[in-house]
Length: 261
Ligand code: SF4
Image 1 (cartoon, helix red, strand yellow):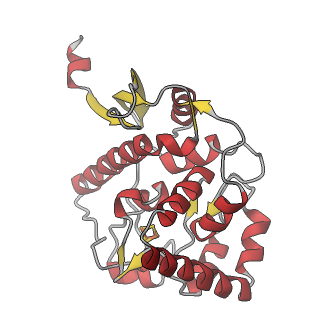
Image 2 (cartoon, helix red, strand yellow):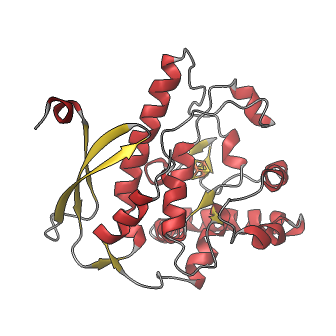
């Protein structure tokens, strides 16, 4: 191993349960921004659904965010996001189809009283968004690669609809939150998040955007590039499985190839 390789960051990421099945292991080097990073991966054998590899993408995204935060701190900026501040959890959160199914499964596995409360919040939020015409607007643009237009995002935010997973202004599914949520960190004053705009919000710049890479790689039906988190249970009920199963290495190669600077 060369000195450069010895100093290279290495991430060990696993999807699947090694106690239940022998995982396929592999090693791959990806470049995040300018930085080569070695990934030592363990994945389930055989065909899987996209959502089965999400734990690997969660870990990779957390690493990417860590690099972004470190760079911001080097510039003298400090992340202002804190537990108990859920202002950004009233935004339109774009997720992939796999994340929609994973979130729906998470809700379905909750104990009955909690599950019912969360599903009720989804219903109530959708009613508000329907009445405001936001659902129709989302449906008109959610096939586009570029994500939600900013003005639609603002109209969504102005409805004041909290994410159904927001409890006491904190994320109640923090370890399982979507990639978009993981990537959203600001260094501008927290008070600005109550009325976000490009001039008042200073985001933490990231060396790669795993959420976008996932959404594009997961767009198998060529109809849904992204969908709002608030659609998750309804979408998963409508399309409970991906159009085709692929192997985990195939899925991950696809996602990694779409990581952009
Ligand atoms: S999933 Fe969690 S972090 Fe994401 S919008 Fe909902 S409450 Fe906020």
